[in-house]
Length: 396
Image (cartoon, rainbow, N blue to C red):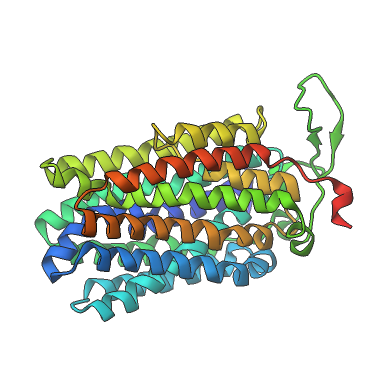
């Protein structure tokens, strides 16, 4: 196939559509249907939030198993398979009337979404197809899910007001099959070498400027790839993992309970949904901004700064964590290495949502848990600041 642009951009576009629709079961979008589901079925917020927690944790636990598979297969089979399975499960969610039915459909849908439609698979795709432009491409990929949350939270609110919460999940299932499964099977490929290309669409293998980030320094280095076994012996990886876990606790809790908190203080549901949409939109553009800046500034310092900004802003820094992993450990085993982080990141998202639900049910207020989230962001910033590039000799 002859295209007037690098084929990798088509791969990125399909990956971003998948990430956009994956937001249909994200913490932010589910915040819009938290109260409608609980009130319609007579469930407590803890019961509903626990499904979010289980789905996120299960997705994180499965990620290390699929990390090496992602490196071998890429998105060509995994992304369409994820779209097909999650689409079918979304239909099941729309038919749920009992807790066990909701858990049996939503939990696996959320789990599969975490690594087949966004997250590990998406970032592995970006790492395989781009090198010099990798930070900005990862920024674009990271934009897709929060951008989807911004749009789908309003779409969900529209469906809830006019047709009920079940119709939102029915529409999600149809969209996944039409916009992910079919295009994915036709166009997706594993890596540029499969088409006789090089990353970034260059005529020769690319080389990156040295770590000094000095634009006047013409020295360059080829990418060095670590194996997962080598990476897990590096303290740097575990500093990244710990930082991601702490930040995810606050992000997951705030995102999932924001709409409920606003309606509790007598803000209209449509305005609450709009606030959730704005929060997600700021995260989307934040990811894009950090990805672009990471080509000129060191992503470690950017990540630490964003962790501090999270106290007053919703612009996430998840993309910077992925950029750091790719920069520190290379693309050869990126999926396998990044999957080590996933159980902690996804577990943190789920734990934050569950913790906030428990605190509200027992204390009648979100204020105590919001203080905990503030402290988690501060500690996350400290840990990421300490996570320096591992030495090459440490691989031995």
